[in-house]
Amino acid sequence: MGVTLRRHVKTRAAILFLSLRLMAQTPVNVAYQCTPQDIEALGLNCSPEEPCPVFLELSSAEAIGGSRFLITGNLHTRDVTLYSILLYSEDGGTTWTEPMQRIRNATLEQIEFLDQQTGWISGGMVDPLARDPFLLLTKDGGKTWRQKPVCDDTKHGSIVQFHFDSYNVGELILDASQGKTTRQELHGTMTGAESWEIKQTSNVP
Image 1: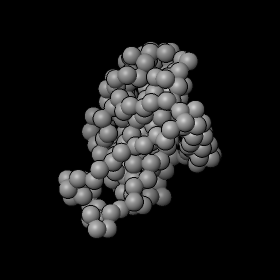
Image 2: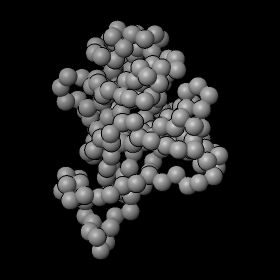
Image 3: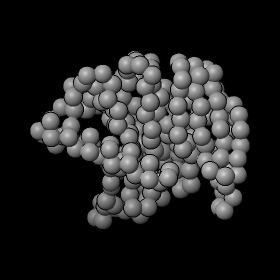
């Protein structure tokens, strides 16, 4: 069910992105220039003579008000997740900017807005296993974002889904499974994602 939902969200994001491109009537280019630092840090096996193909994967899309849109995802090769990516448009998809600096080895997933100003985006590191889940927070409609970790220490796992009932109260499900051992954790916040506490654990999804 989770895989089906994720595929549905990614398909929805891709369709919305395609329609916005058609509305814009000009191609939307997402630039990426591989640096020597990236090659060393990410363990890439490529060179100027044989460059690695880089793919843009869209995860989620959200409309904020009449003409503002957000799209999350990541840049990756066939084997390595390179950087997270967040795209933002204020003119219905005609032009796009990146309001959040790309995070190496990370991906961005679900978007949720409580109103036209306050919102969150789930994300995590992938190198190659999922670890150190976090949320991005905005209070100005997506123009600027802050990154807040779910756990203070290194944590293996990824955010399956999250939801906020108010500006302060929210919950998320963390999949911290290892190998054949299933571990699901329900975390709660009373501070708008500034801090989290485990409320429940389970060995079934």
